[in-house]
Image (cartoon, rainbow, N blue to C red):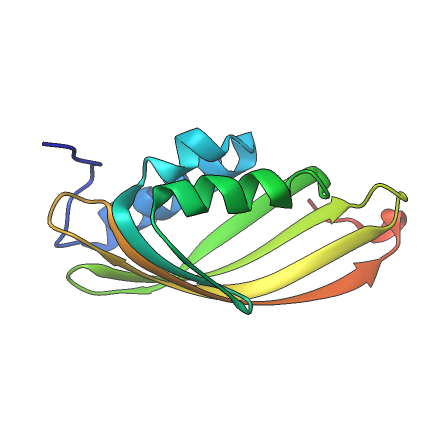
Length: 136
């Protein structure tokens, strides 16, 4: 059986660990690696895009990073309960024209008993920035 530690129910320490693991994985920009943290039928909302399943996650992330260069993400634990975690995050990247952006958002995560994320709902707002204003 596939498991992704730490498993729920979460406490502060394990919730922080889960958030850090997600940040580390996303910063690899490896869609296959990232998708392994989700159930095979995981439900996603990313901005206005709705996805279901690991295959769709890999396809989505592959397309995302074809247009976002020097991507850098920082996640922060916002709240947690038994099998749910809420995070706030920001990330920066530039497009193929060299224009920089910072995106801010919140995610709500729900995990199954094996520690795999079964639901991910992300609200994200992006703003253009000057390269000199980068923080990450």
